[in-house]
Amino acid sequence: MIMAISSFSIKQTVVSDCSFVASLGISAAYERRFKKKLITSIIYPQNKRGEPQYNPCGKYMVKLNINGVHRKVIIDDFLPMDQYGELLCSFSNNRNELWVSLLEKAYMKVMGGYDFPGSNSNIDLHALTGWIPERVPIREGSEDFNKNGVFNMMKSRFHKGECLITVATGEISKADEDRTGLVCTHAYALLDVREHKGLKMIQLKNPWSHLRWKGRFSEQDSERWTPELQKAFNYDVRTAQSYDNGVFWIDYDSLCHFFDVIYINWNPEMFRFTTCLHDVWLAKEGPKKDLYSLGDNPQYRLEVKGPKGGAAVWVLLTRHITDKDDFAVNKEYITNLVYKTGGRKVWYPNDPRPYIDGVRINSPHYLCKISVKDPGISLYTLVISQYEKSSNIYYTLRIYSTCEFNLTKVPEPYKHEKTVSGQWKGSSAGGCGNNPATYPNNPVFQFTLQNSANNNHVLLELKGPKQYSVGFDVKTVTLTGDADSPGAFQKAASGDFRHGYCVLELENVPGGTYNLTPCTFRAGQEGPFLLTVSTSCPFTVAQIK
Image (cartoon, rainbow, N blue to C red; front, top):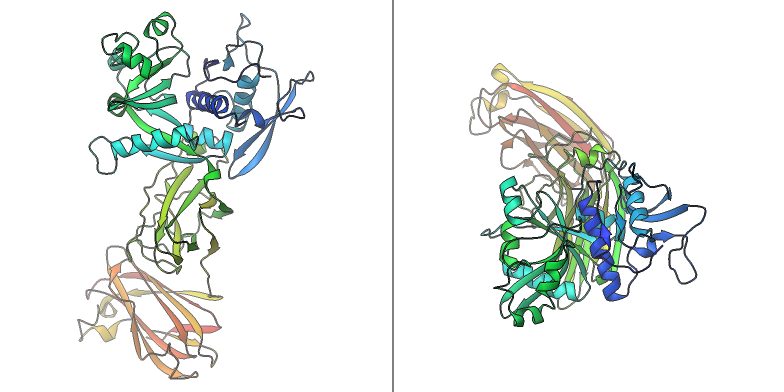
């Protein structure tokens, strides 16, 4: 099964899975360096020492981390070959060992077959190791990309064994490919990162096991590779010139210029506390775009017990892959938003503004990092968000934390709900209270809380044409509850007028009858609207004007 675990022996062939082969390469390098069975431990059967064994019957099991949980993938040892008896799948240059080909076959089986459309190393490494995926776009000159900070972080964490790193190119012209030796939209395994007298260098491996970088500090650049530098980086130019194994050094400036993204997978053992939940966001729930309201988005209450000195809390959102097109032609752009609202539900995307505003990406994974600075209890609201939701989104939300925390769904006290329709038309399009002559002509709805309690919860939502700014007023008519209740009021309003949607939450409302007047900001704006009343107690609602 394994003669000698090594990244140098792995060779990719015709299967378009460079990111997976690069992931195998850095995982093998990690095993060899840190003596920790990172990927060989997921192949079965195993001997008493936990080492994978050759099975004469040809049947194997591989444990992969798919859609938020561990899954066993059963395969055999039949491998694709060409007419000359050469393997068409990835393999090890140690031709007697099987681990490379079997791991690839198991992953290809899960992802739809050897006609693999391509992936990225974040996805592949998470499936192989369960390590936390993070995507760092390379944007030279951008405030969002701290060039020196990213290098120092990689150098420190890589040598501590806290992360696995790959890098990938973006679109490169054919002329630039020939000039640089780099491959368009291709993944490379990061084998080393070092600095010598201010010179920042990265060692990479092409999964093809050939074709190397031709620019500065390539094996042909004898002028820059001084004896001192060769000794500092343990690199022999003459040996490198004699054999192309796809391994090369590249200076960090050139990497930032020619490469598009850095993929980092973090060791989850850095975090003492973790939990996860699995859920689904149905396509019928909420609008296609959550530009105006987050009321139908999945929301969670995160309570963090921060110690003195601060803590780190990472939130990983994983969108489940249930079909090959989920990653081959992925049109679902998701993210995770974080609000400091005391764990309460968030209704508007930017009121209040997000504490952490996530970027919507079409990767199955999105990682959000929360730095908890204040000791004691901190409450956050986590909101799953999307760009254009067209189908059911199955997902896993996993929390990694250096301190204790508690994750629950944002509580919904509303047990009863009714939606009524209406319209502003002709004289009933009276506009807001700034138009005193026409405002009384607006439609009026009356709802009655059918009890005498003082602790009722009421949620009022108004949806109208998005080109109009809409709002509403609520007035107390009669009370069956206590007028001294902390939630009692004579008049309440939905607040600032908003495009197409507004909402009002009321707590500790006494039982009684209330009138609600929906309106547009300007008079004469005609159109339909929907009014939804949700309460914690039985109620009635009807249009009275």
